[in-house]
Length: 360
Image 1 (cartoon, rainbow, N blue to C red):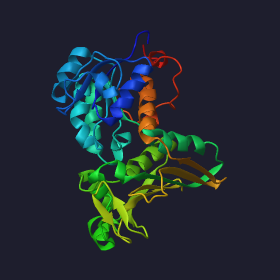
Image 2 (image 1 turned 135 degrees about the vertical axis):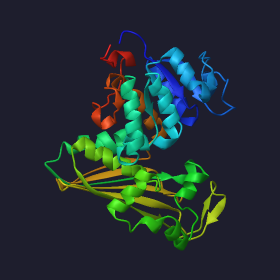
Image 3 (image 1 turned 30 degrees about the vertical axis):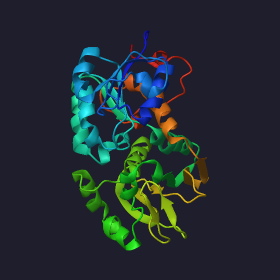
Image 4 (image 1 turned 90 degrees about the vertical axis):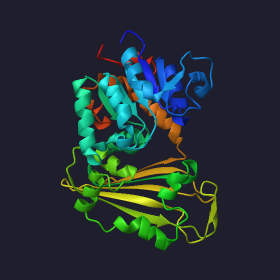
């Protein structure tokens, strides 16, 4: 592409501070920004990023469809919510105007196994208007391409086991409560663990109807199987409480979690495949004890056994950099809802982003 990539930012919260700055630093031109928060609407983007005046003011998200149609950017970066259902208005605003869109939404990485009907609807709309929709971020690389690339050094694989932990204190009260933090073990089993005995067909039906929200790893296992060419036979999820042997104070919950109460949980997703490879992935979200920290660890069992560990990852910054580095591939991708397992491996951009676009 012989001109700058023109992009819009949808959602001007914490993540956007990195997303907009990184994209601008990679030579992209910001043409619009949207948010629903009245405290942000009308401000110059520089007040969000913390830099000199950008000359672009944050517009009301209700105006996104009209403004995107008028400005026709190459890409829209969406950083708002965590489910495809919640992102539907933003995706539709982009797709209806033929604007490629990429999002931080965790489910969006591979929504075909959790919201197939909605994904098919968005896929059709994107194809009709000649643009591409997808999700990316930290899971795309650290739970995805890093693992499949490592697999290419194995002679034989029988099992892939991964775990990723995060402190629920960093993500607000709703997420902390959703992980069962502060509940007794009996309350946890009644409110959260009551689905653990469901079969693959039973839990899959609930997920597709939207009656049960799976963990991030549900979609990740689907992404891994798709990228590796594995055929899913069954997939289940179990939620297991974590405890601590001392009282643990939670600023987010505004309470002290008693010793033996749930500090959070592990959501463990197990996928069996026709090819004989089992994928077992675990999200660990809890109120950390003083000596705990974020960790991402994966082991490939077979010949040979291989383990890779990333300690204390800067998840927000890594998520945003991964998304910005995916922008040229997003533009080059075929129209539709195209998950990143169908993209080429991403790369670090030394030159301006537009120089990596092949389509134009």
